[in-house]
Length: 337
Image 1 (cartoon, rainbow, N blue to C red):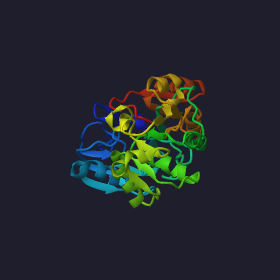
Image 2: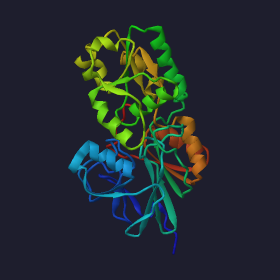
Image 3: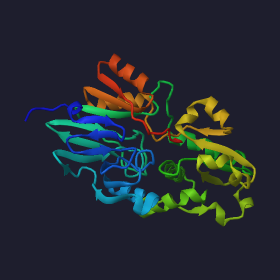
Image 4: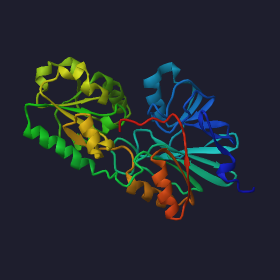
């Protein structure tokens, strides 16, 4: 069989990245007949599809979020399990982003393309670590694709939180974090540092934490803020969606120390603009050096860059000798990472 380069059977359509050889989309932004979903974040996993191919954990997350509107048919695939869609062989490799996150590996005409989805390289006890897959074309995200972004170890940032808690025992430490992935990673990181007290949660975070526990990720004692006297939260850690930090809900908490866990806290002006007293640089994406290291690890001669700071990464990859181009995929939003 003649080798067919992925550019001959992959295309950009309004719905997203389309595989012509298998007649399916990867992380489409609109409802489609067949969708391969890399992970459960809402900008990648939409509702209303016909058949969805994803890891079992991702399908569970989508079911919790969307219920019956998730999709008509679910096809769960474990990491490494191969599945034929038309003439294309699909399988998933761990992406290390959140629980169930995967790289979509597509093989056709003796060629292989890997669509990374969102991914990170730092250890995370809540999910399988990223595994480099050799390929002909690697499609990478570039959320933090600028040299200015350097993510410190999570232990360093969480120690800042615990040190502040010890220094200001009368203040409620309210941490804004994304409900899926970031919340659970923070909890596990605190547990690993020996913090065994109850952690209090905004109601919007409870459902996914319960799912994580059901899927084997033990998070310790978690208590909804709605079930306790707010005065008792002095000297406690409270996790909430970033949007809750400035609304009426947070005003009922005692003597709040406002914190946000996000890769964007690298930018001091952004933290200052959001009135964040304790910025924690904790990201579920790669920083600049990790993006470049990943490209080297997968060994693909051609790189397609999507949803992020595309231009800088494309420029650097070309300078390093790779064939690189930007894929402008509309609909992928900037997460509160």
